[in-house]
Image 1 (cartoon, rainbow, N blue to C red):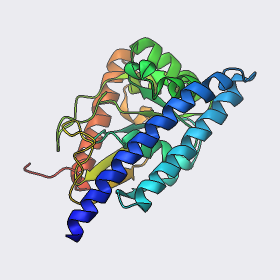
Image 2 (tube, rainbow, N blue to C red):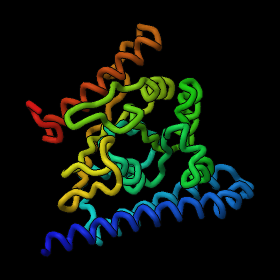
Image 3 (cartoon, rainbow, N blue to C red):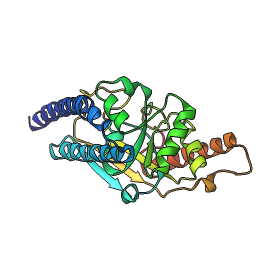
Image 4 (cartoon, one colour):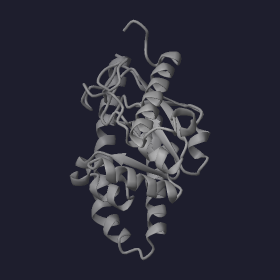
Length: 264
């Protein structure tokens, strides 16, 4: 009986969290976005907006933990708070990955799906925070380079969407590698895991697991592109080698840390 009540509570709390998130997103787009664009200084405007987003997601993560919906376990998170331009490259098992990483990274910019520019909950946020669309690969690299030059940490999920299944990743796109080669920024590999699975590609928000899910975040040591690419080759081949190296590095560590299971 207690287990049933716990499930019903988490189901209702999860639904309420999504409603609150949606309402806050719409209010941000309708109220904050127009005010933000009246701000006379573009750099300080973006700084304020990204700070507000960071603290909003920190609060949302804290609430989800407090009400028993989720648990969060972070290793190496100080690297995300260190500041300075870097490219965070993470696998993408759940819908909540971006929320968690933004809550851990004070000065962050994201590469997001172009569809979010028309989403009523997101359009004002992605515009006022000057996030980067994945619609045009060339512009993605240029815009990401500008954000890195301004001192932001770029958060990128190179799979492009949530992972297709446990123990599997989509092939990594090369945008982050071109970006790193262009500006010489370090790449920070991040491992994400959710146990039991929740908000995956195959699940809906109402597919609440039998117990509170635990999101684990392991931040690995930064890697310099000079370690990964042969600089005597073309930019295209260099980006290909960096992408392959990072994909292999993350995949191997997902097995090493037990996030992926051998034989499944």
